[in-house]
Structure formats: structure tokens, C-alpha cells
Amino acid sequence: MKNLKIILLFAIIMVLFSSCVQVIDIDNCVGDTTQYGFWGGLWHGMTAGIRFIGSLFNHDIAVYAVNNNGGWYNFGYLWGVGAALGSSGATYKQSKRRR
Image 1 (tube, one colour):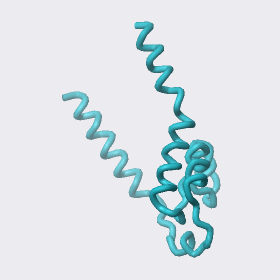
Image 2 (spheres, rainbow, N blue to C red):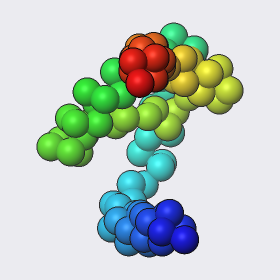
Image 3 (spheres, rainbow, N blue to C red):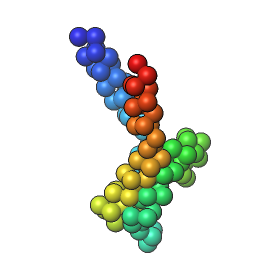
């Protein structure tokens, strides 16, 4: 029951924070002729953490490219995020063995 309350509280907080997000006109992004593919998505995924921190201070920095070619960009983005966070699974296995 306690876990359910924590999850519910977390969900409420996320909804409240997401209501404060600034909406950007997508026509400005799509008007650019550059389309990012797999390699662009891979690079954006690997630098997502740094780009997120930069986006907190500069509104011109985006974490995810809106003008992408679809599935291949998403695939590269997920691979990039996985590559950047890849060692966390090995660390978890080592800490579990020590117990």
C-alpha cells in the first residue's frame, strides 16, 4: 500500500511539473531543411545528459531533434542513450553479488 501511495504521489508531481512546460511552435523546427537520421540520433542520444543540462540554462539547446526521419533517428537515439548509460547494468550485477 505504501508503494502505491509513493507511485501516486510521483504521478501527481509529474503532471504538475509537465503543466509548466513551455510550448514551442513546431513550424520553426520543421521549416529547417536538415533532417537527422540514425547517426544524428546516435549522437543526440550519447550527448542527451549534457544537452539536458544545457537546455536548463539556454532555451536554444534541444535534447531531441524534432526534424528527424522517424524510426531510424529514434533507433539511433535509444542506442546512444544506452551507450551513455551502458555500464550501470554491470555495476548492478557486481553490487548484487556482494550481498
